[in-house]
Length: 448
Image 1 (cartoon, helix red, strand yellow):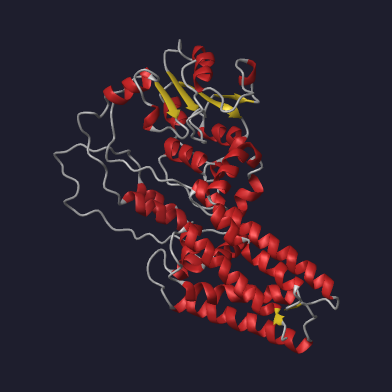
Image 2 (spheres, rainbow, N blue to C red):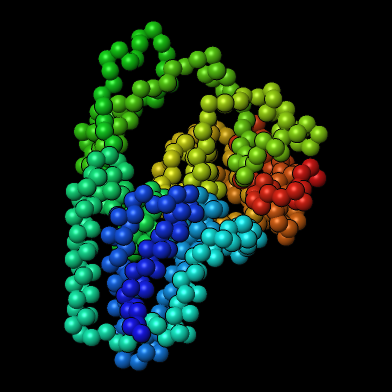
């Protein structure tokens, strides 16, 4: 019986994993299968070189099993992460997460819900075991000639792949060329070029650093866009001077972009809350199913008597909680693949809640009823300008029971409101946790 070469095994294995991942994550057979095959095959050949380098079959066999198990684990982990967060896990998050165990119940639930896809992911491992038992798979050392051929194949296919990236589908912000060189968007890249290419690019950018290129187009404001008879929300900033004195091309482009934005018109709501105090709640995972008159009367009243923004879209970003804070406090869109709010550390942020209110003579207190250092929250809240930050680890545990999960938002507010309520001017910022997943019918946390 002719034995199957490990090269054949690796090529089939890698392409199979790509197909399974795309089919269950993006709910379709990859339409860009030719791109995936072209860009993933060099990786498969490289794996064969690694697993055929030793003179001893047992060593090659062991390495093959280790790599197969590792790849199956990575693909499975990426699939489960996507099912939870709707994103591809980045090298940055892997290196900075550190608290995955706290959500093990959620992970196990997602695994049980996606057992079919997980089983399909590990099918190659089962086949590998069978092929090893019946001694069909060849684990011999590769000859020098074959090694040179494979090395050349990796180089040639890589060059062909790069040529295709550079000359096919090159227009648009999310063209293949921009995704490969200029734009960091793992979700689109994985859908277009495959998971392994996405992870390779992400790891490379994590190690060597990566700055996205500005691909925006600056258009001048039309002459009739701003009408003299109307009043606009505008801050007096001399953009012409800033542009003239700026040497950094990226910052200069930003000045030009903002200088040419059409300001919003003032209306009957402008200035309505001038001089009022503000309490901000970033409601972790809150759903409107929790807003009931008998259970959450205050939320019910706010929901029915306050402002309702019905034409409003809330995107789900990979670092969902921290990115939610980033959008809430800075009104900016976070960047995929990094913790945008952590990267603000030490920056000048005059338009954060705390800094805006501080300029108006307000005190500002921030609170969170979970670990103070989660997402490095203790560091970026200082940059956002808050006078104080109370959480588990900075003193909140002395005021309430913080050993339960999820910690009670009600208790957090109850034991902290006295910090600021008697101040003439105050801003209070709460990052809540009661609404955090999992969402089950037997978990009830409301009121006292």
